[in-house]
Length: 398
Image 1 (tube, rainbow, N blue to C red):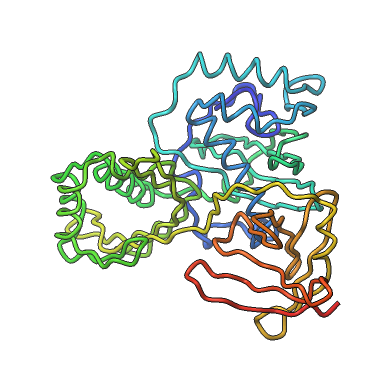
Image 2 (cartoon, helix red, strand yellow; image 1 turned 90 degrees about the vertical axis):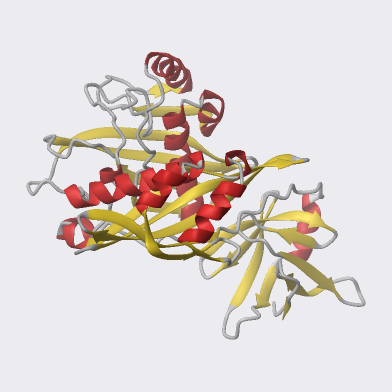
């Protein structure tokens, strides 16, 4: 593992980091009862913070120094478990350079850590998790804590700490260890995806059941024959499925379900490479002692790549107030926090970015909102524009 910092600074001496699919495979029945208290369903804002944490691990895994270091705030201070005093970003940077030069990028699939708890306090957030590790027999595990702060260009780590603690008596931690069957399924899942990326028709066919059914992210029904035809007619650079992360899985007898997030890249367009984020579910069945894919489904995640236009933050006060939501029984509130317009709904706070006159968008939504003004120029409501052209309206009530 990085002996520099992947936690708030993961300079964890003597801890070898080998990312492995079993580190994050989940089975609720395997979790210790004391660990369940720390699990939580993540709000959109918490998910946004956790995306930064996952990116940190992904860039470390890829040895991507250029994208890794900007996640650390210039004034960062953190305390690794084995040093006598806190360190700053310069120590993180020098250790990262040394680490990336000394150890090449791992060959095994990337597996992200899982959150134990995330708390968001406006523009500050705290994350807690265990460092994912392959050696489930080790007598110790490592707790990681990061403090993040949101700025104009996103979330950055401003503090953190790592701590080595004894493994629980039953040998389990929140990311429950996977048994041999789970490891085998994850291995097959990875091989299946790699066969697709390489356009290895023989390997892909061997891992796919003849009765396979599935659907693409654009809703096209697929069979084994259709998939093989698509692979034979689309060159590998046309689409690549990479950066597998946030893996979840379960094995129930001879059936297994694997769910994960990945990035889909498409090339060959005049504007270069396009990148989409997907959530993928795969179903495997053990037939004659071999795990085969019997179903799969991809869903597009709503990541908005628009660039905000310039706007005078002083005008944001025009939009502040409480509005009825187009879903009956709900209200949505817009507030001005510093130079930011914040959309607050059901306890979640999401920044709204200017897109045009009286029009705003949000990063995790493909639609946009246009505020409506009355005869006197005051904002009286809004119209939400779905990406498919449908409209929904709400009026200002306070």
